Image (cartoon, rainbow, N blue to C red; front, top):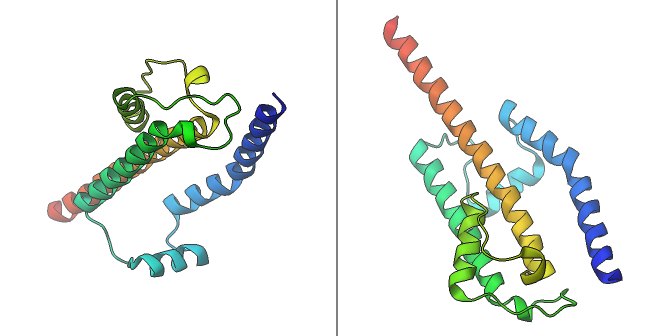
Length: 163
């Protein structure tokens, strides 16, 4: 019991600690054009040109690939959760169909569950489900940003044609 309360307290502390920096980063990302040092280093390591303007097809591909990677990771964690640490109750791994259903429901933001999460997910699997829910929210925000930028681009193009 103490182990579970400690993990919950750590989770809340981490979540509370990232709210302001993440909100500031999102606001700067959507309104600014400069990049932080960490972003520039990450871009260099990954071979990304930060000045390149991405077209909608590439945005879509990146979005699909990122969500596919999250789904595969989620499926994998659910299938091996009996081997994962931080589970005082020793919960068993999910069956292949249930793990697929769970992983896909979190990635698609339907969150449809045919199990009781508190009794069948290990703590680490549950934490990953929470992170996936957050990432799906970010994907939705970024998709909205993509649509906004596309609409503004079409609006500017239309204004140029009318002149």
